[in-house]
Image (cartoon, rainbow, N blue to C red; front, side):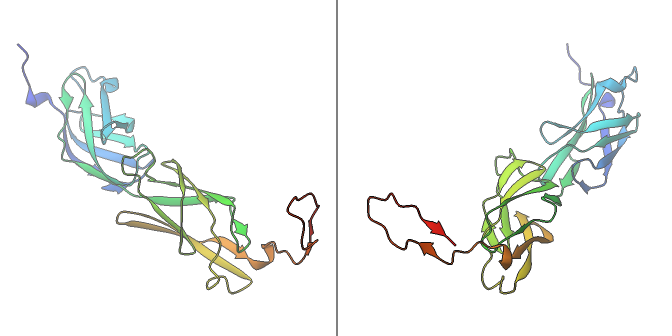
Length: 217
């Protein structure tokens, strides 16, 4: 007959810090984090349903591990010790969203926009059932491509005339998810001088059958 032995189950008493993001070192304190043979390979840490926290050290009472990629939100932290099972389920980590570097590093475009900027970061909801994400550039909402939890591709929209009234104007990229708002200040520069313009088309008309070569100036 199989017998449950609660006295052997791992117990988490505290996790620190309470919030973090990808690659944050998490310290877990508690009891019974090793089996009777002290086999460190039999201990693992799971964040959420199936994300592995990469362990760097483990003792009977403390584990240090690096947080995996995950979208911003709250996740359970569970210690598993083979063959004794799982720890308590009441300890949580709050994942935050961060914005990093852009590629190109200092994107510049004409006032009509057009280019796509890659934005690095963490906590983006790639692969999540609810992947809702609001992204604006110069307060204009855009359809960003979720490449991964750490990368967004953002198409630059035309700059509103009320905003780009001067020859050069810097705009923020703002990323929102639920109650989290992150801003990359002055991330994009719009220059009027970089905007292509057509001053003349020659010839000005043509027959409906086409065939003529048109040049612009």
